[in-house]
Image (cartoon, rainbow, N blue to C red; front, side, top):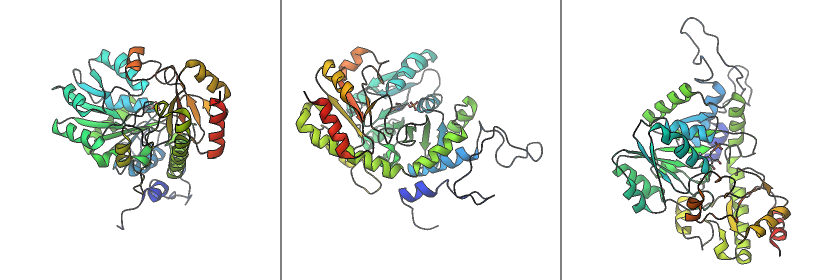
Length: 388
Ligand SMILES: Cc1ncc(COP(=O)(O)O)c(C=O)c1O
């Protein structure tokens, strides 16, 4: 074995080995539900595509390698991945979730899984003491997002991993907002990473997917078993699209983040320091943590492509939406095309208003997902949309 390979090389080569049958450099898509067996119980490694499929396996190997892991378990959506993780719980188990979690995770926990006897507490994971105080004898998972959506609050993963280990609790990190390129939770001590692959991993707003990634063999076995048993698997075509997309993930995410950093710097004096949230800005209360924790494979700080701004009133917000041209009003984020969203009524529509108010998520908050368009065009578009 040679030296340890770099992110960009892994992205291109792992799972992308030429087809052994034909030599095709671009791997084939195995569109099949079932596989011929050479005798009863004698298959060639695959028997039924819900259980495993060669295209899915290629993608799982690829994405696991990008998080520095041995096991990747692919699902049909980010929420299917989250649900699979919670299916490892038994009646009476308790989970601590970041209070500013994705609205769908909140809905799944409160409106679905609570009915099945699982307990959830929503805690501000910026503060270790609050998490510590919420630990109970039956706590099995701590589930954090960092940075959070859309308030861009950070959780110190190294400290959270230590706290989890000290209490024999597993830590899962929803790494959707940074992508495997921008943050490596497993290397900081997390047990499992989850992604909505719909976002940066897919990167082109053309599919829905999710993935769980871990180095823990026994957790991976449990998750593969749930994947096969529950069957929320992605199609071979989506797996192929994802395998194709990860090849450019480094280029895309770096460019998106560079664009966002530049926009945030230029917008801060215009919109006002209190009305723009971006971890790359020195005024962000957790800028130093972002600088240490969010690192590209080159070891450079990277701050992501999400910027949240507050224009003060719903009227100003709606005027912005009516004037903006290059940012499409839509849910989701992380694609090459810029999007704008109003989390209060869109991504966080299912979160009770009191909770939103508590975390400072107001109706005028606009979330920008910055794409790879030319920086000057994006800047000019925002400026004309906020002009009085
Ligand atoms: C942070 C985060 N986690 C999970 C999800 C759920 O993923 P999906 O929409 O692919 O089911 C989303 C979706 O927006 C998200 O933003």
